[in-house]
Image 1 (cartoon, rainbow, N blue to C red):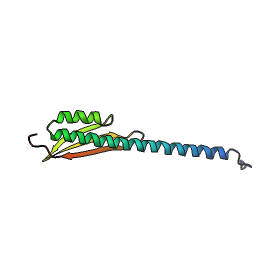
Image 2 (cartoon, rainbow, N blue to C red):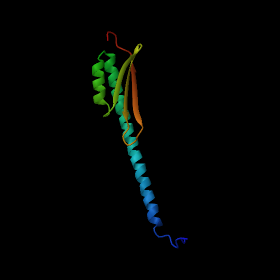
Image 3 (cartoon, rainbow, N blue to C red):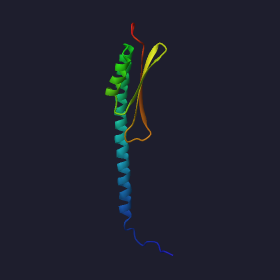
Image 4 (spheres, rainbow, N blue to C red):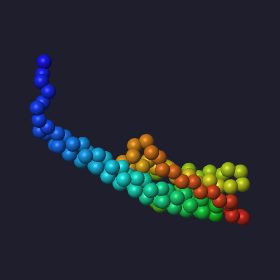
Length: 113
């Protein structure tokens, strides 16, 4: 049978290792959250631009513009839904696995479009 240790040598080292790991985890999640917010803004801009061009009748340019404006790897959908046009932009958030950033914009087609 092993006897219990008689001193606390090494205890501070273990506690410091756990504290450093926790700080790094919090920092990575914070940076990932900021990156996701930045991507959300880019998705909103891309969806707005896509729906504006699609409302004018130029759906091909709408998708191309949204892909240029949106984050890398974003998927772009532009579709007519009755009397309105809907643009959706989706992208995976970096550093946050399983989190999708998404934006949607809606417009009414302009007359003659």
